[in-house]
Image 1 (cartoon, helix red, strand yellow):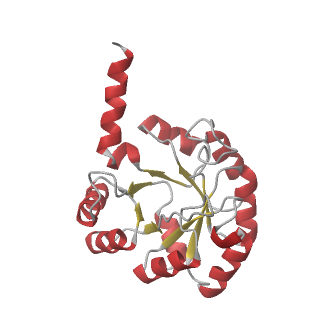
Image 2 (cartoon, one colour):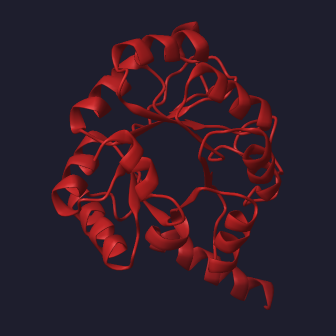
Length: 231
């Protein structure tokens, strides 16, 4: 598929995030590939995945577009979703159709700004689709201005200046859909089908659901916590 076809293929559908961090019971590329296959069987139109090994395993299992990320922690920055050119290079090699990047206003590792970082990778990979993971309207507007292809609400509520935002952030989705021209990807806090419908009613182009589908430890805790409330 070309880039237009990729973007069209995810419109109005469900993208399932298949991720497990090292401290989680399901942290295994084979398991993530099976999660992705199950998501495809259930009707997903795309997959969001973390790390090279998981993405490669998933791409062998399903033919859906993949939004690839690499989560890396650097001591001098709070940015951890695809924070440097090194992670972008590795993701491009996997062949993932879309690369998601933290597009918040926070400074990146080694004191690099988003503008300088994105200008470099856009010149290097002019045909790669890039998704901006943002937390507030100013970030989404700026991401569109500098050339991101898709704008996501992924980090709303996860930056110091957006903590406490109601998730899913339908207010932000609506403002993006009304004032921007890029496809808006709703992501973050979608726990139920009703939440998903609410995100679409707010103007989402597509939506990502992760924890509510692919993190059984967290799902279990949610039910257990509900029991604690009635004791």
